[in-house]
Length: 195
Image (cartoon, rainbow, N blue to C red):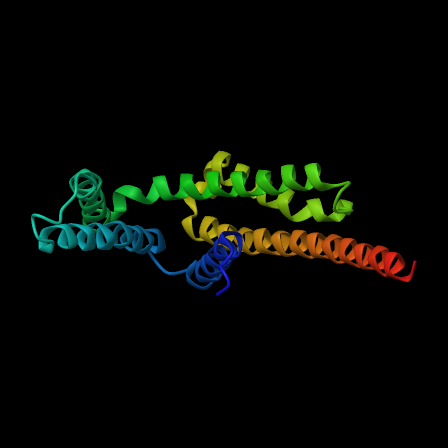
């Protein structure tokens, strides 16, 4: 059975998040709904873990089970707060979106710079990551942009798609190098067989 690449899984999740943000950017209180969804993502695993520990027979519980109770209760409380008071997290989510864009964009910029000779990176490969970084910086520093939640959500969604496009470019460049390397090795082996 093939393992699913963590990089592929991350890209698929970010692609879906980008599409969802673009589709729902104009929904009133989009960040409130986002807070509720994130709250549920904290709450559900915490509840599942606590139930699992509670129904397990006392003899079967380990010290690791008991150590996991504290973070599970923390996740449960945090999830409840995010679901009950989602409006308290509007500014935090906007801030996190801006920081996420800067980090994702810089990741690709640095990766492309480090790989430019080994992967034959073209200059235009840097355009999307630089746009992502710029959008992140603008969403963090321009007050009029921060006040327009719908625009910030739309920009974040578009930037997540640009992130995925850059990941695809990198994957194709890596694949091209692997294919060329494999072809060269096969040619050398064929030459050795002939001799």
